[in-house]
Amino acid sequence: MTFLIDNIGELVTNIPGTGDGGLLGVRRKAAVLVEEGDIAWVGPSRYAPAADRRIDAQGGAVLPGFVDSHAHLVFAGDRATEFAARMAGEAYTGGGIRTTVAATRAASDDDLRDNVSRLRDEALRQGTTTIEIKSGYGLTVADEARSLRIATEFSTETTFLGAHVVPPEYADRADDYVGLVCGPMLRAARPYARWIDVFCEKGAFDADHARAILTVGKDAGLGVRVHANQLGPGEGVQLAVELGAASADHCTHLSREDIDALAGSHTVATLLPGAEFSTRSAYPEARRLLDAGATVALATDCNPGSSYTSSMPFCIALAVREMGMTPAEAVWAATAGGARALRRDDLGVIRPRARADIVVLDAPSHAHLAYRPGVPLVTKVLHNGVPQ
Ligand SMILES: [Zn+2]
Image (tube, rainbow, N blue to C red; front, side, top):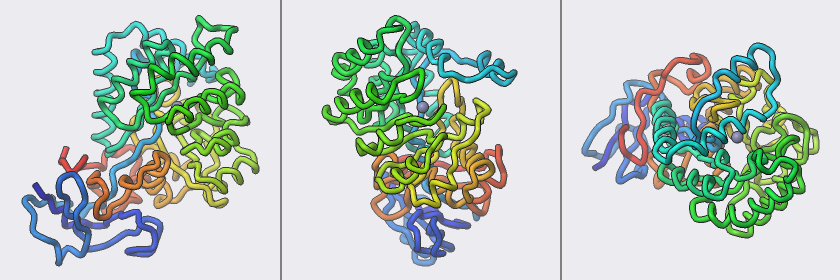
């Protein structure tokens, strides 16, 4: 089956310097041919090849599907009460993670699977065609392994986050818990994970513990990502760069040295403005990162505590309004940037042989994603070449 997408108002290719010459490589009067899950052809619509089916974009913008490179979808329960308390003035400490750990351990496999499925579908309807899924609410050998096993049913981008927080049964025995994560838990998680991640933060894991965990994960063949510098300054970003991590995530509190380290590395700075929104905190300084030459990605951090949104368009709107990014920079960060953060060159781009993950907007340009916040502009989604 082949599909031809035409009557496109604006085609965002994410091939900088092509089309209109800008960051997004916007082309006009273009059409896209999709065949067997891949993009087969991109060119002027008047030269478009024949196809089995035509998809009329009705003059709307067509973009690569969003690549959400940071999400915590395997959990049970919600924390609406904690959110309301925070909005009434209580501080966010990360301690609420333990509430979700208790609910997740008590849940059945089917309950966890249903919740991941619901959130994945919710994200897909809003244009997210790739979503990274972390463990991190099991924190036992068996619960981390089953979280990741369930995650693999929905994504190939799965991340072992046994070092999310020290679980209550290991209170005051962090060294013992790190030993568990580095040994039996990693061995049980390894078959189901592509990545390893650590919450490197005061109250979670310090830089020495994080380095130990990430190093054994890397030696076991996992790619590295780090929750870094979210709640305060710290060593997370420097550690991510030192270990050649694919991304340092959050990056809310950065020193000049941190920004220079990111700019001089292949580590993507993944910004998660849903977390600052939901914890009523100051946003990361995207402008400084971009001006220094760092690669920036946007992701949702979808989780029941600090950012319970699956909406990449919402994150784009926040990035533009609150973080000084242009609409083009934010859209690039939510598509091609996410692909870089997952070290994938077949995603986040519209060119032949890329995966046919494509979004059609009920709006003439990508800028409307920030210009019309909160409006469901995504009207059509192709995932792996299949209309959803
Ligand atoms: Zn996170």
